[in-house]
Length: 339
Image 1 (cartoon, helix red, strand yellow):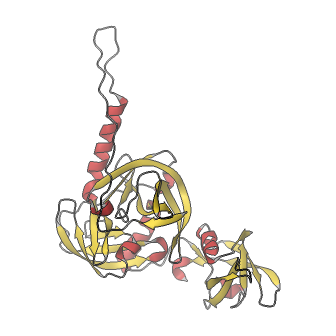
Image 2 (tube, rainbow, N blue to C red; image 1 turned 180 degrees about the horizontal axis):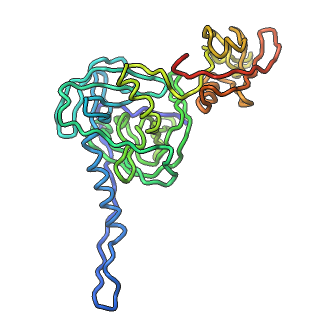
């Protein structure tokens, strides 16, 4: 499966679908009181959720394209994806009411594909409400709000398909804890809002799956709100992240291949001085073949295993020396932001 980032400037997109129905009416003293049609009640919930979050979702434009963003606070801070920001440092942020504001970059954290912008004259901003993503359940109804293919304030709906997916985004980034949803995530949705039926943000859409050159319907992924509420306040305060909550080994590496061209492990190309690997005696040139029994045939395998672990935990790293000697090394992992 391949993944596509939700960012583009032109095209057409899809809107939201809602359930409908007619209320049933009961008359007569011997008949129970009137009850609302469940379809109508659900439709009203959809409308309330959309009305609650739409003022908090913005369009983010750069010289190379556009994406979406979410108003984080009344000071003018906007959270979006790092890949929406790219190499840009200045931005145009369009509010849901059409107001256009100049924005500047506050900071990015590429390992979680998050960035914060700050707009000038932050008047009449409506910060989004956030819910705890750890409480999200498979089957929960969700709505994705953003600017797919340049169509502002578009809404798609679906359910939570999985909570806690780890996925290789490309460019050396492995995202952890993603919410998988059947709500359509199209180019331009990146950085927008994935919300629950109460209009609370549970994630920021970042990827849509594709098969070859075609989009894979019903396979979208969002950065969980628990990650957002950990990372974004640090970016707002200092422009950098010092606590990521994700484990790191403290090495740089590359995928090693056999003479037949098959990946066989991660060759260590650099070791962070004083880092976890250095303290455990792992050296440049060694081949990392497994962590806690999970094979690491490619560098993305190593990143994926570490993404599931927490700083401060102890891991058993299997290595092979350039001379062929094998050993298991006990390593206390560090925080990714500190390596």
